[in-house]
Amino acid sequence: KRKGFIFDLDGVIVDTAKYHFLAWQKLANSIGVDFTKEQNEQLKGVSRVKSLQKILDWGNITLETEEFNNLMSKKNEDYLQHIKKMDASEILPDVPRILELLETENQGIALGSASKNAEVILQKVNLIQKFSAIIDGNGVTKGKPDPEVFLNAANALSIAPEDCIVFEDATAGIKAANAANMISIGIGDASILHEADYVFTDFTEISSDFIQELIKK
Ligand code: BG6
Ligand code: MG
Image (cartoon, rainbow, N blue to C red; front, side, top):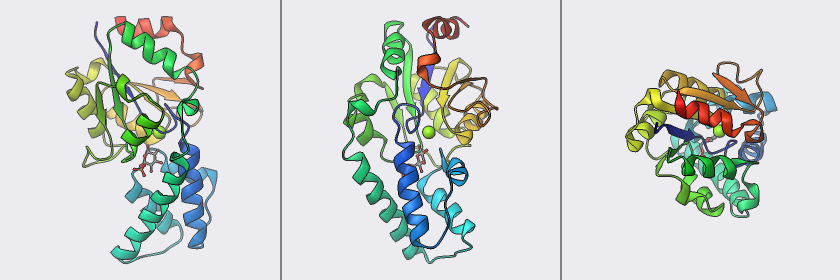
Protein backbone atom coordinates (compact mmCIF):
# COMPACT_ATOMS: atom_id res chain seq x y z
CA LYS A 1 0.00 0.00 0.00
CA ARG A 2 1.09 3.56 -0.61
CA LYS A 3 1.47 5.35 2.73
CA GLY A 4 2.50 8.91 3.45
CA PHE A 5 5.70 9.37 5.43
CA ILE A 6 5.93 12.89 6.79
CA PHE A 7 9.19 14.12 8.25
CA ASP A 8 9.74 17.04 10.57
CA LEU A 9 12.97 18.85 9.64
CA ASP A 10 14.79 20.38 12.62
CA GLY A 11 16.04 17.63 14.92
CA VAL A 12 14.78 14.83 12.67
CA ILE A 13 16.47 15.19 9.29
CA VAL A 14 19.22 17.57 10.37
CA ASP A 15 20.65 18.56 13.72
CA THR A 16 19.58 22.20 13.43
CA ALA A 17 17.88 22.02 16.84
CA LYS A 18 21.29 22.87 18.32
CA TYR A 19 21.53 26.03 16.19
CA HIS A 20 18.04 27.14 17.18
CA PHE A 21 19.09 26.61 20.79
CA LEU A 22 22.27 28.68 20.42
CA ALA A 23 20.48 31.52 18.66
CA TRP A 24 17.57 31.68 21.15
CA GLN A 25 19.93 31.46 24.10
CA LYS A 26 22.01 34.34 22.79
CA LEU A 27 18.90 36.42 22.22
CA ALA A 28 17.35 35.61 25.60
CA ASN A 29 20.57 36.43 27.45
CA SER A 30 20.90 39.70 25.54
CA ILE A 31 17.60 40.85 27.05
CA GLY A 32 18.42 39.50 30.51
CA VAL A 33 16.36 36.31 30.38
CA ASP A 34 17.79 32.98 31.54
CA PHE A 35 17.51 30.20 29.00
CA THR A 36 17.92 26.56 29.97
CA LYS A 37 17.81 23.27 28.05
CA GLU A 38 14.45 22.55 29.68
CA GLN A 39 13.01 25.79 28.37
CA ASN A 40 14.50 25.03 24.97
CA GLU A 41 12.54 21.77 24.92
CA GLN A 42 9.32 23.81 25.08
CA LEU A 43 10.34 25.75 21.99
CA LYS A 44 10.98 22.73 19.78
CA GLY A 45 8.50 22.56 16.93
CA VAL A 46 7.13 25.97 17.90
CA SER A 47 7.07 28.83 15.37
CA ARG A 48 9.49 31.76 15.50
CA VAL A 49 6.82 34.23 16.71
CA LYS A 50 5.49 31.91 19.42
CA SER A 51 9.02 31.08 20.58
CA LEU A 52 9.92 34.73 21.12
CA GLN A 53 6.59 35.30 22.85
CA LYS A 54 7.40 32.49 25.30
CA ILE A 55 10.87 33.84 26.04
CA LEU A 56 9.44 37.30 26.72
CA ASP A 57 6.79 35.76 28.99
CA TRP A 58 9.49 33.92 30.96
CA GLY A 59 11.24 37.25 31.49
CA ASN A 60 8.00 39.15 32.17
CA ILE A 61 8.81 41.45 29.29
CA THR A 62 6.32 43.19 27.00
CA LEU A 63 7.48 44.85 23.81
CA GLU A 64 6.10 47.09 21.07
CA THR A 65 5.52 45.32 17.76
CA GLU A 66 8.51 46.98 16.13
CA GLU A 67 10.94 45.91 18.80
CA PHE A 68 9.43 42.42 18.85
CA ASN A 69 10.00 42.12 15.11
CA ASN A 70 13.56 43.43 15.42
CA LEU A 71 14.40 40.73 17.95
CA MET A 72 12.82 38.10 15.76
CA SER A 73 14.92 39.07 12.75
CA LYS A 74 18.02 39.28 14.92
CA LYS A 75 17.49 35.69 16.06
CA ASN A 76 16.96 34.54 12.50
CA GLU A 77 20.06 36.34 11.20
CA ASP A 78 22.06 34.65 13.91
CA TYR A 79 20.53 31.28 13.10
CA LEU A 80 21.26 31.73 9.39
CA GLN A 81 24.95 32.29 10.19
CA HIS A 82 25.01 28.67 11.37
CA ILE A 83 22.90 27.41 8.46
CA LYS A 84 25.19 29.07 5.94
CA LYS A 85 27.97 26.63 6.85
CA MET A 86 25.83 23.49 6.61
CA ASP A 87 26.38 20.63 4.19
CA ALA A 88 25.29 17.00 3.75
CA SER A 89 27.52 15.90 6.65
CA GLU A 90 24.88 17.35 9.00
CA ILE A 91 22.16 14.97 7.88
CA LEU A 92 21.32 12.83 10.92
CA PRO A 93 22.42 9.16 10.91
CA ASP A 94 20.51 6.77 8.64
CA VAL A 95 18.09 9.38 7.34
CA PRO A 96 19.31 8.70 3.77
CA ARG A 97 18.86 4.94 4.28
CA ILE A 98 15.21 5.38 5.33
CA LEU A 99 14.49 7.86 2.52
CA GLU A 100 15.96 5.49 -0.06
CA LEU A 101 13.98 2.57 1.29
CA LEU A 102 10.75 4.58 1.09
CA GLU A 103 11.62 5.66 -2.42
CA THR A 104 12.24 2.06 -3.51
CA GLU A 105 8.91 1.06 -1.98
CA ASN A 106 7.17 3.86 -3.87
CA GLN A 107 5.87 5.54 -0.72
CA GLY A 108 4.76 9.16 -0.35
CA ILE A 109 7.45 11.36 1.20
CA ALA A 110 6.68 14.83 2.57
CA LEU A 111 8.15 17.46 4.84
CA GLY A 112 6.04 18.91 7.66
CA SER A 113 8.01 21.63 9.40
CA ALA A 114 7.31 24.82 11.33
CA SER A 115 10.39 26.44 9.86
CA LYS A 116 10.37 29.20 7.27
CA ASN A 117 13.96 28.23 6.44
CA ALA A 118 13.09 24.65 5.47
CA GLU A 119 13.74 24.87 1.73
CA VAL A 120 17.09 26.60 2.20
CA ILE A 121 18.21 23.88 4.61
CA LEU A 122 17.03 21.00 2.41
CA GLN A 123 18.93 22.55 -0.47
CA LYS A 124 22.09 22.97 1.60
CA VAL A 125 22.10 19.31 2.59
CA ASN A 126 21.03 18.23 -0.89
CA LEU A 127 17.85 16.39 0.08
CA ILE A 128 15.23 18.66 -1.45
CA GLN A 129 14.63 16.36 -4.44
CA LYS A 130 13.60 13.50 -2.11
CA PHE A 131 10.37 15.25 -1.03
CA SER A 132 7.32 15.26 -3.27
CA ALA A 133 5.60 17.74 -0.96
CA ILE A 134 7.04 20.40 1.32
CA ILE A 135 4.77 22.03 3.89
CA ASP A 136 6.68 24.51 6.05
CA GLY A 137 6.15 27.59 8.19
CA ASN A 138 5.04 29.51 5.10
CA GLY A 139 2.22 27.05 4.40
CA VAL A 140 0.24 27.08 7.63
CA THR A 141 -1.92 29.46 9.65
CA LYS A 142 -1.80 27.43 12.87
CA GLY A 143 1.44 25.92 14.16
CA LYS A 144 2.06 22.62 15.94
CA PRO A 145 0.45 21.23 18.15
CA ASP A 146 -2.33 22.08 15.68
CA PRO A 147 -2.48 19.29 13.05
CA GLU A 148 -2.72 21.69 10.08
CA VAL A 149 0.85 21.23 8.84
CA PHE A 150 0.54 17.44 8.70
CA LEU A 151 -2.99 17.49 7.24
CA ASN A 152 -1.74 19.81 4.50
CA ALA A 153 1.13 17.41 3.82
CA ALA A 154 -1.25 14.42 3.58
CA ASN A 155 -3.43 16.42 1.26
CA ALA A 156 -0.47 17.38 -0.93
CA LEU A 157 0.47 13.69 -1.19
CA SER A 158 -3.19 12.76 -1.87
CA ILE A 159 -3.01 10.21 0.95
CA ALA A 160 -5.60 9.94 3.75
CA PRO A 161 -4.35 11.14 7.17
CA GLU A 162 -4.90 7.69 8.72
CA ASP A 163 -2.47 6.30 6.13
CA CYS A 164 0.26 8.72 7.18
CA ILE A 165 3.20 8.26 9.52
CA VAL A 166 4.98 11.22 11.14
CA PHE A 167 8.57 11.41 12.39
CA GLU A 168 8.99 14.09 15.07
CA ASP A 169 11.49 15.15 17.75
CA ALA A 170 9.20 17.64 19.52
CA THR A 171 6.34 17.17 21.95
CA ALA A 172 4.32 19.78 20.01
CA GLY A 173 4.86 17.77 16.82
CA ILE A 174 3.81 14.45 18.38
CA LYS A 175 0.63 16.12 19.62
CA ALA A 176 0.00 17.51 16.13
CA ALA A 177 0.48 14.07 14.52
CA ASN A 178 -1.84 12.43 17.04
CA ALA A 179 -4.44 15.15 16.49
CA ALA A 180 -4.19 14.51 12.74
CA ASN A 181 -5.01 10.83 13.36
CA MET A 182 -1.63 9.72 12.03
CA ILE A 183 0.90 7.25 13.41
CA SER A 184 3.40 9.26 15.45
CA ILE A 185 7.01 8.21 15.72
CA GLY A 186 9.18 10.09 18.19
CA ILE A 187 12.86 10.54 17.39
CA GLY A 188 14.73 11.25 20.61
CA ASP A 189 14.16 10.77 24.32
CA ALA A 190 11.32 8.35 25.18
CA SER A 191 10.64 10.03 28.53
CA ILE A 192 9.99 13.35 26.76
CA LEU A 193 8.17 11.90 23.73
CA HIS A 194 5.95 9.50 25.71
CA GLU A 195 2.81 10.54 23.81
CA ALA A 196 4.17 9.04 20.59
CA ASP A 197 3.00 5.67 19.24
CA TYR A 198 6.66 4.59 18.94
CA VAL A 199 9.93 6.20 20.03
CA PHE A 200 13.45 5.59 18.71
CA THR A 201 16.62 7.35 19.79
CA ASP A 202 17.49 7.92 16.14
CA PHE A 203 16.96 6.37 12.70
CA THR A 204 19.76 3.83 13.19
CA GLU A 205 17.30 2.02 15.50
CA ILE A 206 14.62 1.80 12.82
CA SER A 207 14.86 -1.45 10.86
CA SER A 208 13.69 -2.05 7.30
CA ASP A 209 11.29 -4.64 8.71
CA PHE A 210 9.67 -2.02 10.90
CA ILE A 211 9.15 0.25 7.88
CA GLN A 212 7.77 -2.67 5.86
CA GLU A 213 5.29 -3.38 8.68
CA LEU A 214 4.10 0.24 8.60
CA ILE A 215 3.60 0.02 4.86
CA LYS A 216 1.54 -3.17 5.17
CA LYS A 217 -0.68 -2.00 8.06
C1 BG6 B 1 10.91 24.27 14.14
C2 BG6 B 1 11.95 24.31 15.23
O1 BG6 B 1 11.19 23.23 13.27
O2 BG6 B 1 10.90 25.50 13.41
C3 BG6 B 1 11.77 25.54 16.11
O3 BG6 B 1 11.86 23.13 16.01
C4 BG6 B 1 11.73 26.80 15.25
O4 BG6 B 1 12.82 25.59 17.04
C5 BG6 B 1 10.65 26.67 14.18
O5 BG6 B 1 11.47 27.93 16.05
C6 BG6 B 1 10.62 27.88 13.25
O6 BG6 B 1 11.79 27.92 12.50
P1 BG6 B 1 12.36 29.15 11.69
O7 BG6 B 1 13.52 28.56 10.94
O8 BG6 B 1 11.27 29.60 10.76
O9 BG6 B 1 12.74 30.21 12.65
MG1 MG C 1 11.80 19.31 15.17
